[in-house]
Length: 444
Image 1 (cartoon, rainbow, N blue to C red):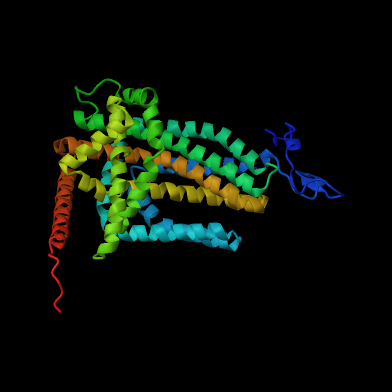
Image 2 (image 1 turned 135 degrees about the vertical axis):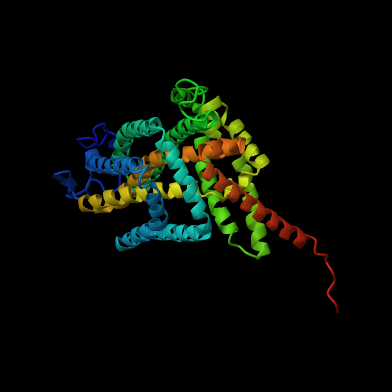
């Protein structure tokens, strides 16, 4: 509010020793007027830029939901293959604009993305199969699509307030270091808010899909009345605290787990490196036991606490062997790539407009706009992730539930699970034989 429509509306600047102000005959350019040599902007200078970011992000989220039935597979493949190129292009643009830190950051991101995709290339066909079946399930439940639209609208309402604060921060009369620290606080706030909304949609969708699968269809006589309202009630009342709590940790732990699994699968016979990576892998697996996305099914259906639900789901996977299939699946990573690509497109469009309006604020506006795009697209793709979650839970509970829904898909999952268990058994046998080699002295 201090920079809205007029400078220092709340007379805050008098409490600050702002370097570069006052003294001599220096002029300051202020809006359309010149009151000093240093340019000072108003909140409304940057607020419309975030309106563009919200519009682009909403359009991309809408495109995801509309094309879910007919072009979802192509869109997911596009996300996997084009993200590396887009990150590299953004890196080049940052270097061209002499933003060397961000150029290096995006270049490193492009390299990591390329290495990860190469490390999981053999898993992509099975991942796409699971995602296609999840899309099929979601497309048969139009009410869950309406939930996604509703939460995108809720996010947009919150973004009106959030972007007002960020625009005021960018126009704040402080040095760039102080602005960046404030933007970090704003970004963490928005990330957690977005994660809570995404996981709320996740819980609602996964609960609805779970009930449909376990009762044999939405029109089954045993189906409870108004199942969507029941899942919505659990998610927004008694289980909302669990969703907020889980949103703090699950995204970071899942991302770390994907990267470690990708590296671990390509190490080969380097026993020293394998030992180090295995230590990190088992550490992350311990965290996954208490923080995983499969908890949201139990939260939505039974209203359990987050840690209790996560532990029950993971124990179910381990006791049935389905954990081997879950670990092989990369659907969460593929959907995350779609969200990141949406964020990059949103941030790039906003940064281009900012370049012509205020070239020295391109990175500040572009990076925060990228986060807006990621969250809005994430609210669309989380619908698919919720269906994937329920499919695995139902398969672990009773494989015949999946067979009753789609017999061909059931056979494909059973074959994939058999192959993964064989692979793990063979790998464990190799490790056991290596450990049993006797330590014989070398001949002199």
